[in-house]
Image (cartoon, rainbow, N blue to C red; front, side, top):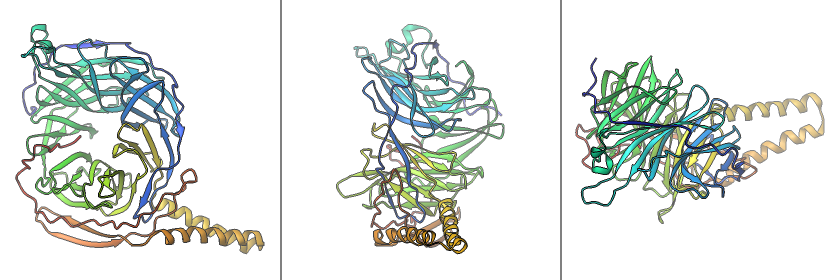
Length: 522
């Protein structure tokens, strides 16, 4: 099947290799006490550890994260070593416990650019990491001269050495038609995903159209496609091909692609833009559908919605924060058990104070727990991952350079508690010793007393399931007490606020929102 639109003109490609070397182990990562507050949880998580990656040896602003094959993490952003001029791509490789293994900076070496923006990071099949983003060319002083953006990707090896940097721009080979002569056509890489052959896919925008490029392990572009819409902002391998999401005028579209990026099927994603005009991210779900997040029309509640494989909405949920307004879902992912995790921020008081927030739901969007980082200096979540052990790695925003590891906080914790209780009960019977009897009775008593003292009101949740014929099913459930936070010996404070998920009252509409602040995904 042919692609949505003819290929855009491809401009010059400049490869720059070996521009910078990584600074190995510039900082070890310092352990910090928990700065999170768990609220309204039936079986919420605890902070396992927290690391801050700021250091006097460099300046970095981390904004993206991925888990690596060794159980550790690769974090990326922009910054530079101390004493360096200009912005570079910065990568921090951390071990499974969050301790720093190495730090690398990548300079694009282009004298025409003066700034870079990091958009995504992915680990490749050989253990290295690739970062994608774009560089900015400033204006050069004339009335007819304008700046522009050029897509960039950089590869760092598993040991932290810079392998290559590639630029892919939207300008003519003829310098008279290039950026410095007033051509402002932009190219941007916004998202990346690894492929089995050691390369990766980079999605973004090229001269105003949605763009997908396949790069091999050396950074060369093997093929590229352009599609109707503004940008490809999300892409994943699926069934021997790829699945992508495209931002368009007043809607978003899902693209089912073959192995060469040719469109096999285009699906209009049926979001009600009247009720949810602010949508920032999608996730492909295991059933072939989509999950999306953002906030509602009144900018008050965090939104999570589910679409089926045809793009029709099956349900939509809203989550209300402690202050009752200005709550926002920025990231969404499907969890290993078929539920969802939404990350963003919630307002915690009327003085416009915001806390980074993670909300965990089941497969129907019913809230299981939420975690508010009320003591953090961050005002949101830059990225969130589900880790191999079922927990969550949360990269806090606002340049705090802080990664927090949350435990799973699900039925696994309850099973562990039950198992230890049975063991404690059996031991006194078999050994008939006073010591084991005291141990068995004291610890459970302390564990059950603390949640009772800290909780003053049980949250009420309302779940709405919306099908295409607008039929609504409503059920209510009450969350139970949150367990004690055991992070580094520091307990989180239980909140007395009520968590309410409100029924969506806006019927789906066929027209898109006319609010030009709408962005399909970040």
